[in-house]
Every structure is written in C-alpha cells, then in structure tokens.
Amino acid sequence: TLGVGRTGKGDFDITSRGVGVPISIAYTKGVFGGFNLEGAVLGARHAANKAFYDKTTSPREILVEKSVAVPADKVTMLPEVYDKLAKLSAGVQAEPSPAEQEKKTVAASAAEQAAASVHAEAGSEVVHVDAAAEAAKEASA
Image 1 (cartoon, rainbow, N blue to C red):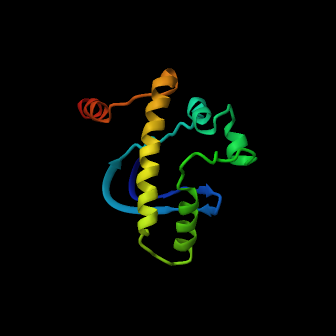
Image 2 (cartoon, rainbow, N blue to C red; image 1 turned 90 degrees about the horizontal axis):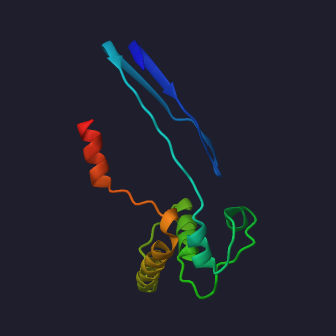
C-alpha cells in the first residue's frame, strides 16, 4: 500500500451468524507505505479423528451431516461450551461450578493423553513448529 493523505480499508467476514464489515480509515500527513499478508490453512487430521471416534470418518460427516456421534466413553466439554455460549449470548455471566471445574481437569488430562497417542501414531500428519525459532528468523530477515 502506498498513499498520501486519507486512506480507507474495507473487509468482510462471513460466519454462521451473518456477515460483518469492518472498516478502517486513516489520515496521515506525508507519504506512507505498508504491506499486509494474511493466510490460513485448514486441513483434516484423519488420524486424530480416527483415534477420537474409534473409526474412520470425514469432517463432512462430523460437522455438516452430523452423522457421527461423540463416543460415550470420551470426555468432552461440548455441552458446557454450548451452555456457556447460550448464557453469554443472553448476557448472563457465571463462574464455572466445582463440577464443571473437575470435568475440565479430567477432560484436559484425557486430551493430553489422546494428543500424545495421536502424535506417536500420526507422524506425518502432525507438523511441529518452534514459534520462538520462527520469530527469530522473522526478526533477522
């Protein structure tokens, strides 16, 4: 971006709740320049899905068709997340109950164990990134 004086920027976001349009306007004296590059990669982790659901399944079956149920032996916080989101959307704020805190601890432990198992089995599906090393490379470039 190169410019002099007033500049504006518009963008749009599409979510399941609708469309949003963030707008920014800047006024500067003199010449300025800038550059922005953003991106994201989204991919399925088939080994993690198989480990969690105990069978091979696709993201479409899980997220769109909702034809795959969460196994009864898995500890998840999904009901609590949906309950918390409903309360927040209604403007209600509440601290987690002791039972929710305990379930959170159990779920976190189960997630750590599952992650270790998937990392051991998945190999090529898991990409390890050392954020500190990447930041150092970025700073020296």
